Image (cartoon, rainbow, N blue to C red; front, side, top):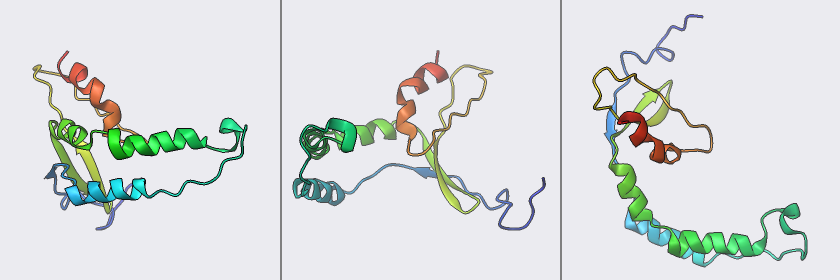
Length: 131
């Protein structure tokens, strides 16, 4: 099938732009404040995971995201890799482009699905690009 027309052909308009993750501190502060103000629901006793996420687990998870997760560390770890964005068929696409130092290395594309992210690949990028 051949696609034509300006809405189908990005070959002449797709610009690849360098990208860095730079979350404003005010956004992280706001998130922490909202998590601290979370109003949790009551829980039906004894149902465990049968009726959703158990309240204790959910509270622990919210507290981890509020006080335990190293947002800046993860941001720095991701920013160590070359990141870019481009527009494909009207959608902004974020991608990493990590080149192998090996001459003649086989190019490899790894894609994640929804609701995943490039974070899923952080532990395999090194071994795949520089075995």
